[in-house]
Length: 353
Length: 76
Image 1: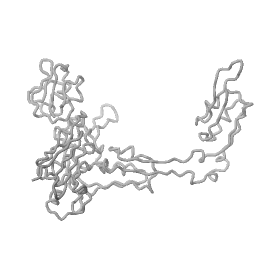
Image 2 (image 1 turned 60 degrees about the vertical axis):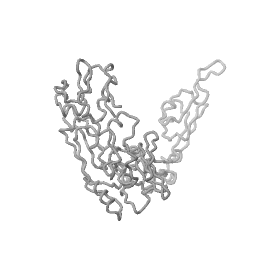
Image 3 (image 1 turned 135 degrees about the vertical axis):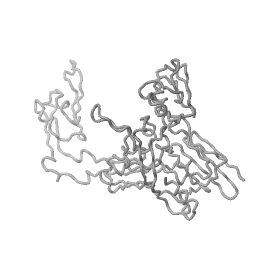
Image 4 (image 1 turned 120 degrees about the vertical axis):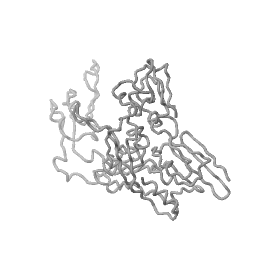
């Protein structure tokens, strides 16, 4: 029998078994682990244990959320297939079993269609895992509103009224204290034509009519505008490692550009009477499903913990962390790719509660 | 992880006793700010300082540590 070797780097763990035939490498990334304990439940040889995730997450302890007994582990990879957060992986001869058709895998995905996306960044802001990055390039402001503006420096008395009134901060003066050599209060006055929106407030407020300005868009309307100049270009990126397919992006997207497919279906029940509002579940939930509700008016009694189940992935981390067993997560459906192995099928089915 | 206390740091305020979700389920009167009436609770203030009684019941959720103002109770 070839012995397994375990290597721990920070909070990440790696277990390997090398023989003449093949090399198996099991890896755990703590940063991605949501503390659901599905790996410990699915492990056929009880090699994995879920550590006290509440204490670890809430106190910021430098400790892995799971532990593995490398002497018990048979490197089958079942835990990596059940993991809803991709924190676990098994590689056989440097190839992940998630890329092999003979192994089942959870059917889950999150996609943003760049053709439909308007790059508003709502999903980037909402994503509880910070897995989304939206890159966008905005149109050139000066091409969207055009006009002409000129300040007659001979007439200008350097009063600074236009500079103070300009809503776009497009007028810049070089103020200074007058001396006998240069008895003026400003050396120069400039208009930043990239910022100017030709609103004509400066022209109207100038006490000596030193400003001549005209807005072309007001005169010619949108005909003056090349639609191509107004286009916003961008691209979206979802970090598949960080994404747990919670569905926030899909729900918040104003143009239905995001599509999320979840692997588990089920129910989340909170016993409001048993709950002591310690907040462990709120802190552990990877999907921002749980929160403490705020009463609309003083004296109003609200539920202890509020849940918005449409974001729930039914991982069960809240149930595991609750010190008083007030939470019940039932998984009624597990969606996975077919496998010929009955033992794997049985294990995947065992994820249903 | 283990629940630890440092009585030298403890103010005896009893916030951990009240905040602990397990304590409340064992001895509901602690939620009202009263001291525990039973040694079945995880911790209690005795003679002005915190003392662990039934620490085996601790689920290591970290709530006591979050509330303690003087780092007198923590998970290690």
